[in-house]
Image 1: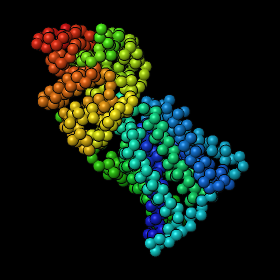
Image 2: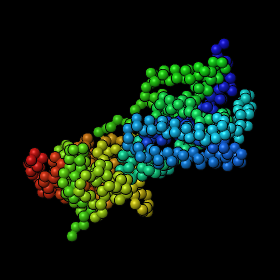
Image 3: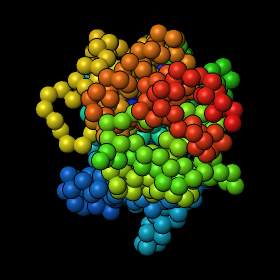
Image 4: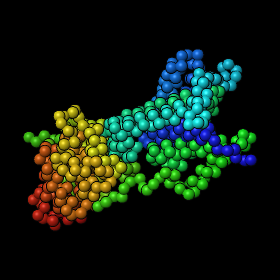
Length: 302
Length: 236
């Protein structure tokens, strides 16, 4: 039989993966909004966070998680100042290729650091107890799934409040819509960019903490495949709006989780093929994005 | 002795090898309205963009209250007290009217008492009534009022307007010019770029005619009664 039965555990795992991918999609979408830059190196921020968790796994849990957030946010801000800022105003192709270079550079650095003990991979096992199941609604759900969903929902809610209720949020949304006009109105470009990059770093750190629960062995290509899937999800959802990008990320995470659960164990190598076949279908049927309804701007009236 | 608010001196702007604006000198004294008219492509918008730091000036000087604005970023020029109502209004359609106005506060210096949006509401009561609506649902004339209101809440010393009457119905055009009179009464200095020559010459204290990137002629309000002179200036 090709398909195993769809059970509660598969469904909840898929939602959990969708939640994590949604957070990555927001992180990528936030930076795209203000810089018009698709940050391919986003996965390497998550990877750096995972390594930090591995190297600090003897520390108290709170300190280890705090270190992860500090390292990832600092790296995210450094990436902006050292690499993206000098490239501002360059063509999107130049910036995209540059983020490839940054991604490979960070992977190479991680490899050098990792191989100091002559074995590839470090273990971040502080939180593996979250893989234990709990009973809920008569079914079994792993704790990490509940944590992922709660963290994603909380983070998205906070972000929505931050973007709609605060001045810096208003400025960031304006910069994402029309950067030149926003600057003409006095919106400080460097401030909204730093704000977006900071938030995007926080999200990458949260993703690193949750991902290491399920994949405690951290290698230089940690989160690389996930980033590619999320980038595809962001494009499929519609990259020019934060919420469609987020839904796109969630959808691909959910679909991956579902197909992974439905495929028999010896057939899971077909997972990427199945996911990307779906993506091609979506791009053929809804090229503007799965969730793009109507135009971006209202028609100009006289 | 009138006090100069904004001065351009020998301003030149180049796009590659082409000079879009050449040796433009003009001054706008405190509390004045100065008009800048001319045919399409004369360099009117480019002049405003140079003042706001959107395009670099290749030569000459731009001064606000005697201090140079050259080589400063758009946001720092806005924060120094120059506000632009851009061509095509450039309001944020997906934001509410109130959010659009609050964006204008980004360039506001200091914090006065009371509701900072009051300046816009007082001049355009419609904005208060529709403050919760999406800006994209406003008519063209209302959107122009929003764009002007958004510039005013920053409490600028100098207001630059780039063809505010463009694409508006005749009644809406009249209300824009009426609003400009009201703004002058509040002590704001105005540099107005327009295509509607007669309206502009009648309103402004002085109107310069820009043709081919150079100032050709200066008209006074009395010249509004002599349309032939204005037409001749365009064709000269």
